Image (cartoon, rainbow, N blue to C red; front, side):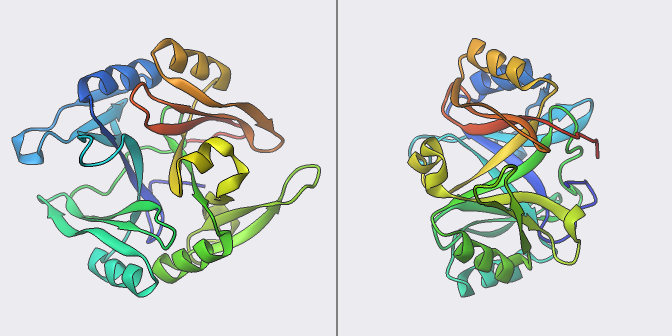
Length: 266
């Protein structure tokens, strides 16, 4: 499970790129009860979403020329420059070379061999997310990829991740769990999913999808639609997992909401 005791390879940040920061801020603060703290000139307008005084993610304006609206998932590294070298050596690319972010940390932006974008955060003054797995915070991540074994090999080479198969309830295949090195089953934080398994995800191409814990999945979906977002995958209940749905905000950034079968705080 996710915790805020971040080790190398664990998800430790997420942020939103949107063409309408004011509109997106209104959407997420209404949906999750987040507060928004705008960044000053020194951050280029990059601000923070907060939940009960703890950081749950960042947000920034992204123009059409810079990229489409999306949530990005970041993984912890003690040396982002070494991670960049590992990404390139393993067949990925480095669209955003490692750079210092004031005194807060060092970050880089990468794509895996299939083209899925992910970030890496090397903590300094900012260790990462202040809360995970509580309602209103990140609780799971999924990679939609055309080749699950190849993706597992890539991320194992870059972060040392381990993977395991979890049979679906009632049979019909297995889900590929991913976890940080040496942490065992309790270190699982996400999964690898064949790109063609979910049509709406396939249409988006290879990508990472963050899951946000909510108290009531159906109520969250209703609120998403009331606020101008869209439901892209009907709520689905899975034994031992919980009830989840895929949605987008009013500007097209995709994420999932889930009411976990056994939700626990960080």
